Length: 112
Length: 113
Image 1 (cartoon, rainbow over the protein chains, first blue to last red):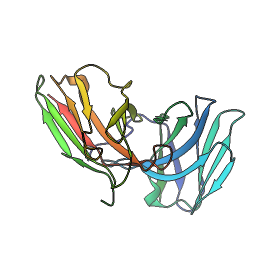
Image 2 (cartoon, rainbow over the protein chains, first blue to last red):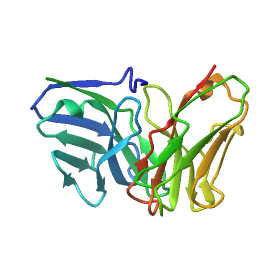
Image 3 (spheres, each protein chain N blue to C red):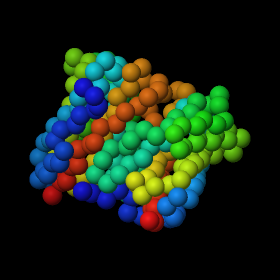
Image 4 (cartoon, each protein chain N blue to C red):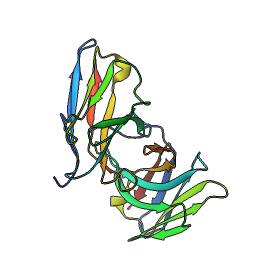
């Protein structure tokens, strides 16, 4: 399959460690944020989302933190597994439209 | 259906040829989006439908790109007189209400030779 993210920033972690992927978003009026995981040859897969009236949301092994003051979003993955290896994108939705604007992506590599 | 379905999965077109890419959204999803993803980059917005109405086409790169959703379900993205710079993955996403919960398909990889 095709390769996604040939020249993206890369985070390399050991299996079992926690991972933190960061994203700076651009629009202070954005009211909804999503983290997506994308494996080679596949479309973006929803991981977790958060609305702007929250600063933290937890899912299964994942946590998203939102800091509106500095327009920063982070994704924390607990006990990272080889299956978590992929490119991760943050996306934001402004309050003036319905489209998502994506960040540049981070490649996560998990070493067994 | 259970997910967003796109076809064909891969398309190779000669420069100047017209292509049509299909998207079957999740049943009952009102909103449908098309995105273009160049190699190594995040998806970029092309156009947005709510039911059969095309509410935003500001991301379409040129008038060679045309999208439709005549019955408010299946959508087709058409590219006329393809150029090499059109080579990319074309992703479709749908949402029940257009505000939250966007689900993406696997995309169509277009290669223009």
